[in-house]
Each structure stands twice: as structure tokens, then as C-alpha cells.
Amino acid sequence: MSKTQFMTLARHIIEGEKRHPEATGELSRLLSDLSLAAKVISLEVNKAGLVDILGYTGDNNVHGEKVKKLDVFAHNILIRAMDHGGHFCAMVSEEEEEIIHIPAKHKIGKYVLLFDPLDGSSNIDVNNSIGTIFSIYKRITPDDKPGTHEDLLQKGIKQVAAGYVLYGSSTILVYTTGEGVYGFTLDPSFGEFLLSHDDIKIPKKSRIYSINEGNYLYWHSGLKKYIKYLQEEDEKTDRPYSSRYVGSMVADIHRNLIYGGIFMYPSDHRHPKGKLRLMYECNPMSFIVEVAGGRASDGEQRIMEIQPTSLHERTPLFIGSEEDVKMVEQFIIQELVK
Ligand code: AHG
Ligand code: MN
Ligand code: MN
Picture (cartoon, rainbow, N blue to C red):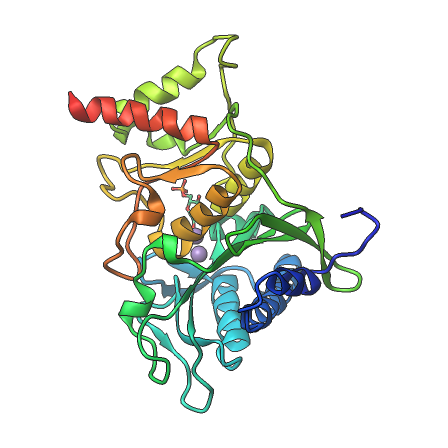
């Protein structure tokens, strides 16, 4: 597509569905509703330094972490934008322990939505990038009843769409329905998402790694050896790598998706399952990265093949350029077989 042709998100989604005669148009409508929520959150994020929205609410989320007001705002906006469209039979948010059911007055739909309303929330107060992540599945229980755990606890490979919104130097929405990964930048003057990143492909090998090195002491030895390996000098393999870590997974993975890179949140001696959540952080990001030609694993297994057992479970994550993820897997497995 020529850069002078304005391709809006809405048009792009509709054209994608046209290639599938069996499509009902529902996914288009649902993604449009999501993009509306993204615009509202983006506006609020941009105002964060101006209005009295900073600081803690005093409440803890389901993981016992302090919740900032903007997390709650984004959580509420997403529910308000998505619960009455007739698309969903259940939702899950990082900020709510239980399933979010669709109010009885609204039609129940055939999809489920899982989301992290605001990712990287420790960055809000310091004007660093933050994001929203979403994951969509088709329900598997009968259509006329409220959604259940069974509908929500599906493997990542069953996702029908996933995406993220990055509130950075500009706001960008990246999504996939399994055929290509597309990025749309929000034009703040007329409020449209316009195609800016067509058919994103992640470089097969990179020279960037992203990990919280403050946890070095607690890492397993395979990972310690891998990071040391990245820091050694070797022209042939383009080492040493550069280290880049924002502390917002959406921002870190978005950069790596465009430039190439590996993002890691491993398990360690203190956190046997790592930190990140499978259902609304790791699975959607893995779907996007894999469709873009990358790889995502927990060190031993493909993230999207993990059978989830609870809504908020955690998993270690190694995600990004294919060759880099394969390399860290080798280091981890070598230690395990010792
Ligand atoms: P959230 O703000 O949704 O709780 O997620 C924060 C996550 C993720 O975005 C980021 O990569 C990671 O936490 C950072 O954790 P550390 O501060 O432990 O590095
Ligand atoms: Mn998060
Ligand atoms: Mn969050």
C-alpha cells in the first residue's frame, strides 16, 4: 500500500475480513470497539501529568501490588467499552480476581476477552511508555449461557486475535488475527488510527537483550551463562549485545519487534514462575511475535502451548527474535540435563 493512501484501522479490519467469506464482521466490530477504548485511555494517559490522577488509590490488585488510579481508569473504560457490544460472554482483567460477567441486560456473545488494562504502571508517574494488552478467544461452551472458566482457560494457540496499545512518543495499536501483524499510529488531531507499520516482521537475529539485571543474584546458572555470553566480544556473532530495558513489557517488546531483540522475564530462586501473567501478558504478546516470525517460550515449552489452569497464573517468558530465543533455550536446557 502506498504511504499516501490513508488506511484506517477500521478499514483495514474490514478488508481483512473480506478475504474470509465465512466471517460475520463481528471481529471487525469488536476490534473497533477496542480501538475506541484505546483512544480514551490514550487521552487520559496524555493528561496524566496535568490532572490530579497520579498517586495510589490505596487498593491492591489481585497480586497484592499497589494499583495506581490510571490502572483502574483503564480497567473501567475497557469494561464499559466492551460489555454491551454483544461480542463477549466473559472477560478477565489483571485488576479483577474473578471472571467479569456480562450484565444481564446486554446480549451475550461468542468471544472472551482477557486484558492487562495498563502495563508498566510503575512508569506512569515518570512519563515513560506504558501499554494495554488484549487477547481474544472464541468461546467453547454453548452460546446462550454466560462464559465460564472453560472458555477463558484455553491455550494461547487458540487465540483468534491479540494486540497491544503502546502509549509512547505517539500512541500505536498493534494487532494480529493470525495473518500478519499490523501497527496503526493514532493521529491525535482527528483521532484515527492510521496504518504506519504494514506486515511487521521481526528480524531473525538481533543484538539487543532486555531483562531486569537487578535480579542477577537470583537467576539460575544457565541464564547467568547466557547473559555473560551476550556480553562477550565476538565479531562473527555480533557480540556484545546492547542492553535495553524500559520496565514496560509492551514498550520493550515493541522495540524488539521492530529492531529485533530478546525480552526475558525468567523464573529465579525467589519466583519459580517468574512475574508475568500467561493469559493477558504472555499469550497475546507471543501470538503477535510468532506471527511476525519470532519465537516465545518459557525456556522449555512454547508459551502458546501451555495449558492454563488459572486466570492469573504466571510463567517465565523468553520472547523475540527466533535465533536469540533458541539460543537461550539451549543454555537453559543444558543446565537442566546436567
Ligand atoms: P504491570 O504494570 O501490568 O503490573 O506489569 C509490569 C510488568 C511488565 O510490564 C514489566 O516488563 C515488568 O513488570 C517489570 O518488572 P520488574 O520491575 O520486576 O523488572
Ligand atoms: Mn502488565
Ligand atoms: Mn497492568
